[in-house]
Image 1 (cartoon, helix red, strand yellow):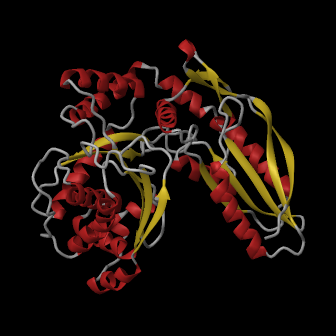
Image 2: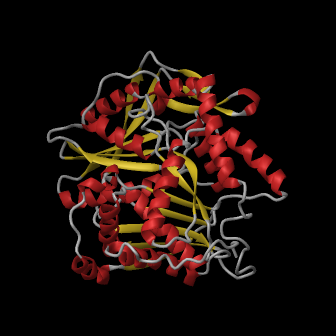
Image 3: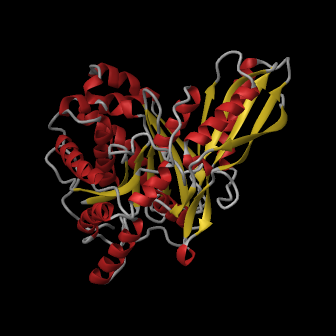
Length: 458
């Protein structure tokens, strides 16, 4: 593989908008996750540039992008009582890495290099007090800039914001104000404090009767080797089957997938009712649709899986997750106070330690746009199912995390779990169980859940 020559362009930016404010609620939430897990949750992206673009054009796009979006000019500062705050610069400089490939480089090889860079660059850690939250590289060949590749800190953006960055790089928009600072100021007003208070009533209802952890007593204590594992399950058949369920029930594919995963957890681990954390998108709220900021926050969903049918679990998941989405905008400090109060009332600390995060594009969630699916199509895809064991994971602050990856024409589940709560066999039963539940329910409205009534977690 050829190696490009590496240079850097100093890119200046100047804007009238800047200042210092507390972290937004979304920033507080992701900062807490970073501190607990040790993970920085860096996102990434890439795009091709129009033919004839140069490194100078790429630098101009980067400069304009940062002038339009205050979050991309943010670094951490020290706020009141030693708590972190956000400092947004009005002017400064950022480096644009320029990777120049030899004239005889193969274009397909350059694309593979870009894909490899996208896969590995997010592993480089940020110093949030010193580094800008956006890093960008321009890949050039024979004087033309072919691709832009970037990494973006989750501290200033969520998945929706990362897509906005892509859109703004491809088609630069109009100048914007200091949106992330406006959000921080708004969240200190009485109107927004009331939003957080309402969300806390929802959280209290979900947390009041929790066991200490979602999967109960730790199994496999004292075993040798790493205690955390990861695996990826990919099923074209489950994808088609869940679309069939979505079509029949009039439910978006995201909530159908949540119901299928919950049922599979109930079957494999015997936990019912099941309370899980889901990532809710707050961009439906006024003024938040097009802001570069971490807007998505966790909410809690409780589902009783002892239903007459999987369709009934879908209906329960739909209602519970809709309520959770309406109560997913809150101050994490308020949640910490609620959790401490409930822990004292129960006489023991309790946490929701199962997280499901749907990372798929929003178009996947429109059930009305789904085509017809036949049993023959589903059965024909079963042979393409794959389960890949990905080895140990260094650290986790949950018992189980399931990411629904943004892949087309398949259901791709990336799962991390603690071996002390689920054995490898149970993890495999859970992942394969999602496909089994989907296929059973695809064309049978009466397909049973086969999950027992409410029981204490093991």
